[in-house]
Image (cartoon, rainbow, N blue to C red):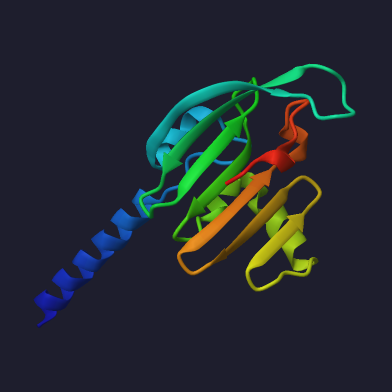
Length: 164
């Protein structure tokens, strides 16, 4: 019986270890866009586009790179990077709520702190912290959201226009 328990324990331990490795954090806000592909299966190549300056700002455009991946859980995540290759925004949409700690990276703690001081609704969360903005909504089998770091957003880019 002891051998059976040991074998069961090792099997369960291996399963937990494999699952945690499959969802290990690699990319996220403030990290290089090149790490995004490690978060899931790429579903769109890196896209480079110019975003026109918002109305009332200085003329010009911001160069933005984006890469879309699908996580093992089926969530489609798009990460947006500035010209330096640093991820300044992420969007997500899928049947499960993504791992926000992974997506927000080092900005997760400021997000949690800001969320504690702001009113949240059952299916909607609008959090604005000192250097993080997260808008998320969802219900069973349908979650979506967008997050960005205002200090990393390229000049002339309006992150409020991002769609999950």
